[in-house]
Length: 122
Image 1 (cartoon, rainbow, N blue to C red):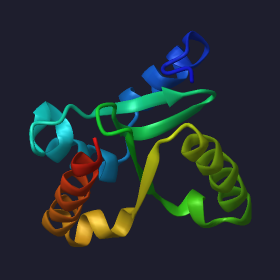
Image 2 (image 1 turned 90 degrees about the horizontal axis):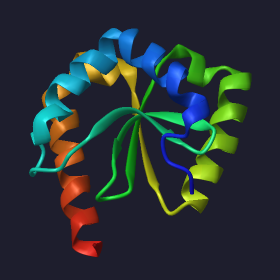
Image 3 (image 1 turned 90 degrees about the vertical axis):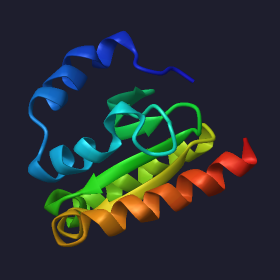
Image 4 (image 1 turned 180 degrees about the vertical axis):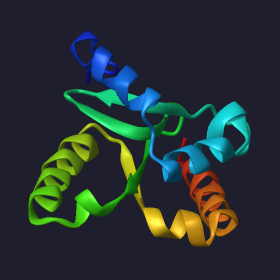
């Protein structure tokens, strides 16, 4: 598995510098090891793909799904991408963007539970 490959470096930088409002809100609660002391990285490369957030220690990717993820093309892309990432042994959690606006605290609690369960396996 190739993590953060050189050929996606500029794209990852662009994504970090142009995060959506929902990504910024969630990042404010993930950065600095705020969830159980786990390091979470943003805009992380896995093969030819880039995930919104990634916890290397738990092999856990977190995706914020905005409108583009619900189009036919977006769904097809996500299916192919998710299959590749799961084949690499990485779990993917998808969070609809509106839920971050509606209930960020609830989302963080949900992620904390997932981190705890995932931690039991490692």
